[in-house]
Image (cartoon, rainbow over all chains, first blue to last red; front, side):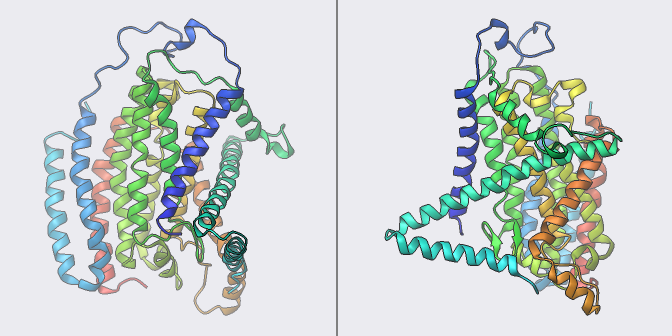
Length: 116
Length: 364
């Protein structure tokens, strides 16, 4: 079907999700109540803002992830041709992986992989 | 080989095209009509699939816990999930006053669209694919990592502390486990030398990779199963919606049809992950063959490819559903330790072993 399939899938997804929500909005019974608009935190009135600060650890993992994800992007084209190139490609990827693995070990040693 | 189902699919498509081209003179209109038919038939496949997966999930849970499961609505309880959907359709969709309304409404749509997009390169049978893209494996891993945007959006816009925490956890979890998923996909790409799904299936005509590839491929299959269970936020990795601590995680504030969309996307993702595993490791629509046993092989050939594909996919779905009732939920630190200190180093070393296998021809 070719790349037109992408547009088709996007349209089908939006039409299905949006249509379902709109139909539900049209036929569902609604009632007004002040308490309905409050955040659901098990019935207790919320204290302070809900957009709170969260653990910096999430950012740390996101940063390490970025490095390894770039590695992964490099590896896809390599993986396609490695069989035809042979041992040279193997040696090169071993060096590449070794350097990255050192990076992981460094992050590990520095305590970046420890959840605080 | 009995390819009657595959042949009838392409024959149906060709017949439809000829009929439309004969009755409508405008070429653009013909392709638009064909696209509309394809879209409707995709929905006619996906919605019953999600109903069935919902039913199957409850029945598997009941089977694991020695109880009956749904058995009142319809024959053997099969219409229970339909009744639930109708209930959700008639429920009021609440939006919290303080929430970011635009993002709150956009999030379920994004989650559904990304999971639908990932359906494109899946090979259901020979010549039966929505889009046989030449970078199929890369496409799937790229699209499936987009799902995290919808989840973060839902958690952030809800203006609820539970939602925010659930979304952050889910983000950290999905990006972490994506690495292991990618590396185990790459090990099959190395052996095949192609990212195209149909090439990967064709390379398994003489044996599935899980059999041909010895222990390294089995290791990457197991890593793929674990990491993709985490990627689709299913138990034991369902920290993002851990009901005992976070109510319902990132979709706490969602109700009615918007909540149903998250549920639907979860089941579509479960299907996609299992389909990818079946295609890459278990031979896709290729039948099971045993060496020179020609009688056995002929009997296996008689089963159509699409049934083989669905059978393998549902086997993996069944395994993933069993995980939920077998393993206790991990803590967030255990989760990240498992990925960064165990799965990632193991899969990195495994990729190098698989490369050696591919270059020196150690595989069958």
